[in-house]
Amino acid sequence: MTGLLELHDVSLSFKGVRALNALSFSVAKGEICALIGPNGAGKSSLLNVINGVYRADAGDIVFDGLRFEAIHPQKAAHLGIGRTFQHNALFRRLSVRENVLAGLSRHGNASFFENIFRLGRDGAERQGFLARAERTMSFLGLDRHAGRIVSTLPYGLQKRVDLARALVAGPKLLLLDEPMAGMNQEEKEEMSRVIREVNRVFGSTVVLIEHDVGIVLNLASHVVVLDYGRKLADGAPDEVRKNPDVIAAYLGTVH
Amino acid sequence: MTTLQESAPTKPLRQPAFGVGTLAIVAGLIAAFAVPAIADDYWLSSIIIPTVIMGLAGIGLNLLMGYTGLVSIGSAAFMSIGAFSTYNLLLRAPFLPLPVVLIIAGLIAAIAGVIFGLPSLRIKGFYLGASTLGAQFLFEWLFTNFSWFSNDSQSLTISAPRLQILDYDLQSATGRYYLVIATTVLLIALAFAIVKSRVGREWMAIRDMDVAASVIGIRVARRKLLSFGISSFFLGIAGALWAFGYLGTADAHAFNLDKSFQILFIVIIGGVATIFGNFLGAAFIVLTPILLDRLSLIIDLSFLGDQGALANLQHIIFGTIIIVLLIKEPDGLSSLGRRGVEALRSRARSSN
Image (cartoon, rainbow over all chains, first blue to last red; front, side, top):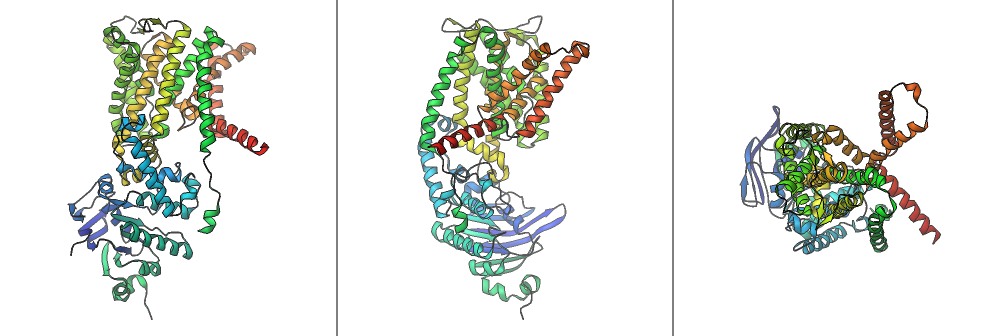
């Protein structure tokens, strides 16, 4: 089994507390994979290990054929791993457009002098960046808010800006940390639709964390259930739904 | 989601703003070059020149602190490096024209800035501020204990060799003013070019959320060091102008911790992440003590006894004004100005 992303026996602990315990699973190219599990199950930690914010104690990761034990977040970005955050980590004093443009930074190839004196490759870079940012913003319905400072936007729109910033760079793998947290049912369904579109139109493989099991089982084609840093179940939504361990630990008994 | 989309987006008034902006730039340049026709030597030498130079130093620190979010309380050290480098270059390489000397001096300060910026890759906030104190004390010590830097002068002072560009003598108040204002105008243009480029955007991204900046692929370490370098380049040139365009003769103590704090206040009072705000902050720092001096001459303060008590009273009043200002206007004087302009604009719009 080879996937776009493979984890082999990944472990992580914080001062003796095991956050991830010899975790292995594989994410196939093009799928939407959901991580579910109770608070403290290690879901966010797992995303942080994949894109290098945390360093695993043991195990290794294969992304797009490249094997590594630890990776620098910038390197992960340059390999094509995009990421959104559970708690908005936007550049709060910048406009929506500037936030999205910042997401393109890794594609900048003009040198410092070209950039500040507007020489050589700078013109093409500026235009190319703007065009990509505009396309992404209109895809996510953000074009009308492009000039707004992000900290003045309502929460739901900020979540979209976070997604736009990750998406604009054209990531091969998109890690979404609770993209629907704090949303009502209608907004969650809207966000699900957007994620499905992103997956279909941009071809990005998606790994997401979400607590709303109803939403997840509809959206994802692959579900991994975590509990106390261990993998409890791994498979298609229907299999996972029937798994007795999952029912006992997380979904609750179905009568 | 539909309700969210109905909230009015603020449309940037790009087309008209551009016309007005160009007009403002031209008017500002004309005004800047016409100043010596209106102001006498006292105003030029004692008020306008120091205000402009301190504003320029404020820009230097603001690029680092306001745009990149890195604190420094060693700004004056980089000014002293610029001043001592300029002195030695003019002395030891007399064939170099003054503009080239200023640029090289700025670059030397920039290298020092990058080196003292290295701790910023590991620490931030208050602790980084404390570590920049290292630069402050090291260079003050270096320039007072090694007389080579001041050409073995007994008093450890550096005086400008003749300031000239293409045989044009710049020793008069007017000449020094033109040297200062021309350098400053060019550096303001450079500062705007930087903050409006990808580099500026990446700095602000690091300032607002450095983990996210790293995760989207911004080369955080490289950008931080670049910010220290560019900030120190501006400060180095400001230091050279301070020593030779304003003071005439300087020693290392002209660039002590007091000066670093003044620059810090200029940034905070003028407004973080602004360019022109620094000149408002500088005007405040330069003018307030002069005004307090004048005021104490008018009011009879003989009951205070001696001059020392009077000076202390001035410090207390100065500090109080800063505190009140920061409570009433935490975003600095520039936001006060911006609100004024917006109010005028909306009035003009409603009258149309």
